[in-house]
Length: 319
Image (cartoon, rainbow, N blue to C red):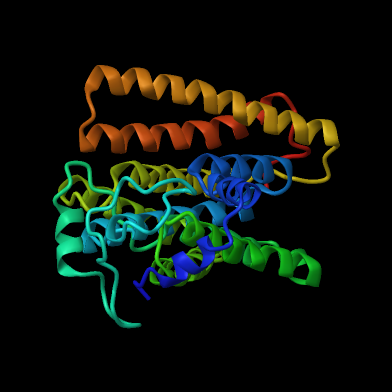
């Protein structure tokens, strides 16, 4: 599963329009896409189930970062000069023929050592794009029951992770094993998140977990402090909402829904600007990144809810 043959086979169909399409699919797998989706669906449709999707994305992101840095396996473009790099000439190869020789083998030790020795390493296993797409789609189906009753919606949602996997192989960014590992991690993250969030007192389970991860991120470089901080911010929001009541999402007019979404993006831009300024002032330490990520997440989500209540963009009292 760490052979370059699947990549080379897909790239044998390369055309300019197909490369453009695969690049567009891959671009939609960036963090900004999922952040926008959470805000649009959360404040435009239903907040509480969409935060379950966010929880799944954060748990999967933590797992992806830990596995990538823990295993330190190279990408296809690094182990074979024949593999095209995002549709263009490969200038990143570290080993001319370093792909796996068997179906269940790993890339050559020379290729692995060369990838780990780079000044700014860029590891492949698992695929973060495929993991995020899988957990996003799976948690959507778990959180929104009406979607599961529509076969066309289920099919379209299920096909997205597969298309993401094809794009990552086609662009030479991942092996087949990377994509399969990302899909398994994404399903696991969605399942754990839904198991935690569907409980009436979800914050009593999520908050201790988030605090444990946050503390671990300060001592273990394998745990990304930014993602740990976002998880902590989400857990604190869940605790506050459990105490003060979740907002009523419906019935609401289209203008109210659009107003909540616009307000969320305005708060997001303000929070990012403030975070960048504070990061520049205090430095890029683990604890600083953790604290700023937690504060920004809580400010964006909780601040939007509070402002929307003041502006009467939520109908009725808190639930």
